[in-house]
Image 1 (cartoon, helix red, strand yellow):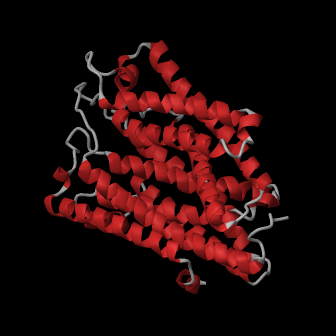
Image 2: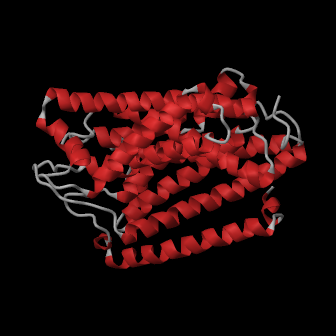
Image 3: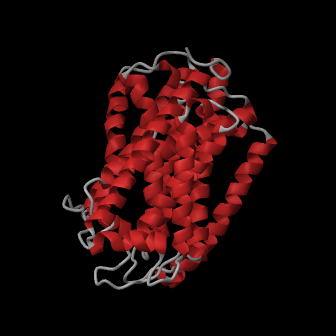
Length: 392
């Protein structure tokens, strides 16, 4: 099936060339970072995790979101999702690779990543994060390729793959739960020290990931005519609505606990994120308020059946939802966790040009992987006759 990558329109190769250019640009900035070290970034002794780790966290959620298609299809025999499952699994493959690359670029000496493999430590949460992330990458590659090959030959998938499919469902929950433990296990960080961190991560993942998948599917439908099926789209949109509601509710619990308890350690980070520090506004304030507004507006629009089922309005609603959740995880999570420091000092941090350009390069690699895999999947569906008609 690899040969299908060589059978595309000129616009497809133009897109790949554009991604290649972004990758080259990001690689140039990373080469500079590799030479001078992490002092090329705005990281410091007090703020040791930054924009890279925040993007890693967000993309783990995108990877885990594939389970929102697999679970209904295989646990509840909801066949309407089976046409989109391969797209969700291949999106998870690209997201897993992006996650690993963000860890890689965050290391001042990237060869140190081998220490996790050469000297495994079951007491380390990072070790388990590597295990679940690499395992989930393997599962999605295996399941996606085997089921796609079966669809190409118009035969049922082999029985032995069913066990891996069910395993991937539980594995999807584990990758973001373990990621949450990386944060919640640090007692000196009040913003992260909460028992519902894992629940917040999963709720955010199960609304933002499917929303991103739907947006990409809409783009593919416009470009190629691929029809995922109206009922599948509406059902997945309902799942996004429920997950977003839970995500907002859990965030509200955190805000209430911080404000009502009056405990300084709980409230300091949240106050700085929304109101500034020592009477001075901070760059993060506008972003966090924008996240709140976009989250509320997108939830209202996606919760009301009339606006949720409006195909012209839905893409804009999903864009707002993705931006809102990305700001929460991609900016606020890291910034709030390191404010204030365990010594009650304030160390400002904002991603600089190097971090942003390297991150764009990493995202471009993920987009390239997903573009190639989706190209193969859609071509196979054309051969199998499941491209235009919704699956039964």
